[in-house]
Amino acid sequence: MTQSFTIRRPDDWHLHLRDGDMLRAVLPHSARDFARAIIMPNLVPPVVTGTQAAAYRDRIMAALPAGADFTPLMTLYLTEDTDPDDVARAHADGLIHAVKLYPAGATTNSASGVSNFDKVAPVLDRMAEIGLPLCTHGEVTDSEIDIFDREAVFIDRVLDPIRRAHPALRVIMEHITTADAADYVRSNDSGLAATITTHHLVINRNHILAGGIRPHYYCLPVAKRETHRLALRQAATSGDPRFFLGTDSAPHTDGAKLQPCGCAGCFTAPNTMSILAQVFEEDGALDKLEAFTSLNGPAFYGLPPNETRITLRHETPKHPTSIDTPDGPVTVFDPGFDLHWTT
Ligand SMILES: NC(=O)N[C@@H](CC(=O)O)C(=O)O
Ligand SMILES: [Zn+2]
Ligand SMILES: [Zn+2]
Image (tube, rainbow, N blue to C red; front, top):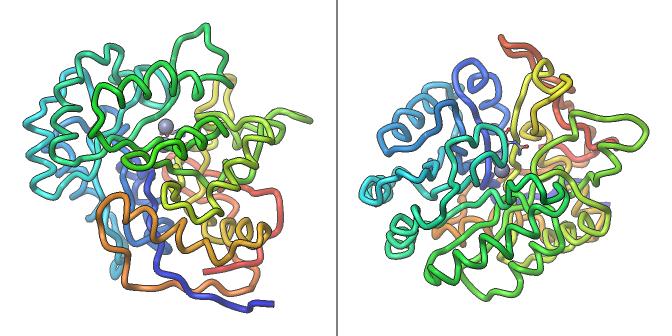
């Protein structure tokens, strides 16, 4: 039995840090295990301009615990009014590493997202030209499309047309939840990748709905049936460089989750590495964990992998079940099994 192993320090290629008190409460949990993270821009109001992204980066740096070694990689929230020159400037300054597409209304704080994709064509052209990737929340929002089909329909109706119209644009499908998305990524040799979350490797839709409704397992895109979870496990543990970790750790207070209409999001920053080590171990793929958490992401983003390392020890971790914030407690994702790897 392996008692410990060491890998390059991981990065999180999809993270919600929020702002203010919540930022200060959750940031230490990411900074402990992760060296860098792609910071999602869906604040209220969203991070739309380079100036706003620089100010948000400063607030994140100011909230870091003393001695932490963590670099936020900023993104801009794509709107129909986004200025291609502003995007290009923020990229040239080394400030932003991606632009995020939210179809209008698809998820938490996405009201300013895109409805008319023709309007963003000039921005996408410029991004393709300068090599700046597009991150997508890949769900259509049409009310007549079943929520469990929204990712697959997005690929056909939105993503594939965008990629045909902008063949040089590099795209990351965020938080994929279906075999359809994994297959679509694998059907392309270059320019397309996907992030996979911790929770989508662990839960299927039964965990949310069978035997009582479990709001802490509700996130978007919503977890699908078991065959899809298994397809995600296969993709994540395969070592295929097109798949890498984006936790989508998305904290909401219990007060906001436990409502007649509760918020979407799972808070996985504290225990992600413990959970992933166990998932990869279970699938006989511990030797592929480093590729998923620490190598494939930087390679796609054109960044060097981290030089520092973390060691995982075979020992019961001491993760909190919830963290306190001035706005109320935030429940940590419960994988439903006892963890035995600790960082
Ligand atoms: N994943 C979620 O369920 N929620 C995210 C938004 C998102 O990533 O879609 C959030 O900001 O809360
Ligand atoms: Zn999303
Ligand atoms: Zn997210």
